[in-house]
Length: 326
Image (tube, rainbow, N blue to C red; front, side, top):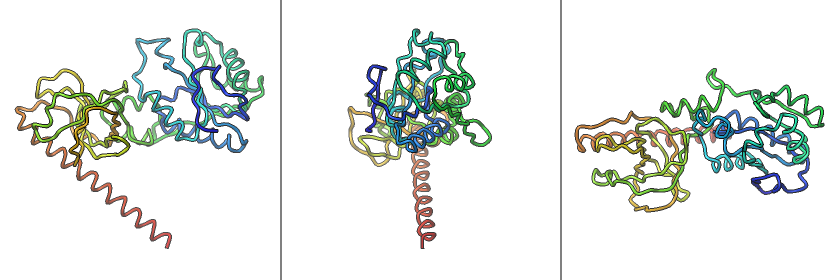
């Protein structure tokens, strides 16, 4: 079936043959979540069924404990796009309300998983919790699966460098500016999306015009300058991006501004996606605009070398693969 998103139980198509379901919040869609959905897709194909995901919006913590709710790594739009790329065919985005939060584990499974979705297989991570007061564990889900006649499969976490991949760990890495490490846990570069917004036009007089982005993400990289790729109108441009307040000019409002290499167009509107590859330095206040310009020139040169080295590495890899084939 073509990819479909349902925002309520009433929007679900019928019938849903041999539904295989992954359940969770999936903030970040990191390598642990990707493992879950590889299993979902494999199970669904083996049964000639439907690969599905059940997630929630807003994040349950926004309703249950807003003061301590974590900043989210990705937007709902990013999550849906990544689920589609993973091979999921149907996503049910349940509005998370206090009424939903009051459902016991038994009620949640009986009413939603069994009666409305008729899931044949349910896959969750080993730390999955559900139902009122988070009383539902994987052990509780296992008992309910036997009661209602569906299979339960627990997907073990992914470890990278001895650390268990988790959304909370990735949030800390991003907030610390450890973008390279976060990318290894995500399985892709951390990305910030948003609309182009007018800037203060500080970059152009310095010789480095920028495109400014109004970020949609709640979790942003630490203040500093990064090697990035900026996606505009479907094309990716090597770029150097500053996340900060422009202290040299007395700024106070946080901005995400990217200088696209070898790009001279004027862009007044549209959407951007900035993919973060490596942190060059912390943001700092310079003694003059001229000193800032000199530093930006060094940042841009390091960015050029980074992408040149990456292109060279890719060429060597292609040549090795060609030699192996012959």
